[in-house]
Image 1 (spheres, rainbow, N blue to C red):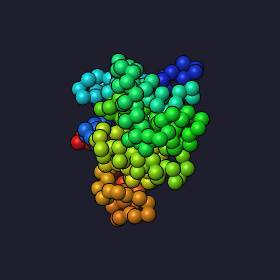
Image 2 (cartoon, rainbow, N blue to C red):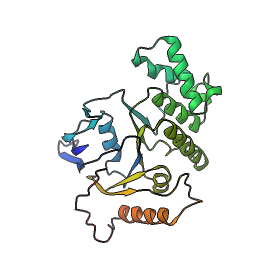
Image 3 (spheres, rainbow, N blue to C red):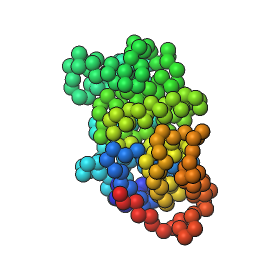
Length: 261
């Protein structure tokens, strides 16, 4: 992502800046989180990466290919599960595989394999209405990962889940990520979630959003809020200060930050 800015037109026809000039590079196979205050443009930036929202300036590239629309190389998981209620779990995953022109038997095989990967091998024939929120999100993850995307974008995917289910989903996601090493960009408003999951965290300013700081998370995995080290606490305090508009000493919120990897 190079010098990306995104503008919208308001209902009165005014030009509104949603995302200010932003540069971002994701290391292949890394797990990166994007965090910032509500309304700062996190989801807008993610939707631009997915090819759903046009950018007003700059360029977005995935493996040196310009993103100018949705691509099978980029998978997206939203907070809303967006499952078809008339399809079973397997049917939802198979439907997403139709764009790859696979035969019916191969679609079925890959769908069952993806559901097994997220721990739903025994619920393949269940319909969304028969599944819990956590199970629905597992189906949504399986549906996306079945296509083997190079880049996985996740927009607060666990925000609607209870604390216990959320922790279970963290463990599952990290297990899948560790096995596949798909590049992940994870949008969240939860500081602890970002610290538990990520290799790197980018912090955005209030709207119009831009990245104002980047933090490498060096605490050993697995991580949890019950087992934290000094580095975890230091990073958490640093992010909280930024979210409350208190930049680190010597760091101006108006200065550009070098985010190259």
